[in-house]
Image 1 (cartoon, rainbow, N blue to C red):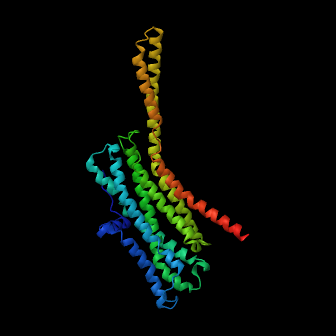
Image 2 (spheres, rainbow, N blue to C red):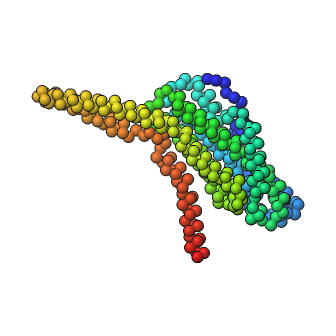
Image 3 (cartoon, rainbow, N blue to C red):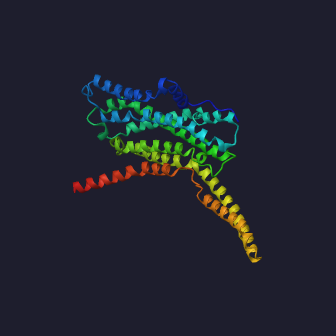
Length: 341
């Protein structure tokens, strides 16, 4: 196995947080508190806001970076369990397991500079495009200056997280592709990474719905923010489906091969039982008849082998997470329109 590249800044930072007491989970709400409180303190101190009042844009914008980092940390920690569950299907020596566990959480650092540069550019353009409705009655320059740290943090973390997820899920696809002992009947292994991809997809979908609901004022008329929102939904769906597409194709081929084998045996057994009947060897047909029944049962078992590597409840849960908020939103809008008519 080739030498791994140096982990990127997000991987190193999340690794540092996970080494804090209690696994570092307390860090993310603390970060939200800091990003939420400090800009308000600055606006209170300069008289831009009455002391104790909350600006919605600052409160909502503080959510993104802590949430994304916590979501990636949660997904990273579940990736190790997924590797352990799939490992029997790899056919690889057990001493390689830890290397693959690290591959799933350590994104190479070659993407850090372009990702940070992109995040900074999008943050500046997005803030400059904020609508007057989102700014409110506060001085525009003051509120944008107060919002800048959380916006930069959020927009910089976003491309780093997307690259991390892309690399992580590409590694999942590689594990599926290079595994040498995939057994279509071993559902524990086949379903091992479905929860990981579903969690990744849902994490991005949550960001999208949060932007539509809690941060709707900022999205209104803001082309940059709307484009980012569309991209987030597309990324969420892609994260769930694409990493498992390769193992799906492999399972389809494996299942077709199994069906061909069992059909050949069924054909041979059918020919043999006809031959014995035609020869008047009725007592000798029982053994062949029993074998025919056993192979027919095996054929039914093969028919039940799934070719999509996720449990039905994982698929239904992801679809619900993706579509249910849309349905609720459309229903509430329809009701509001009716009441306003």
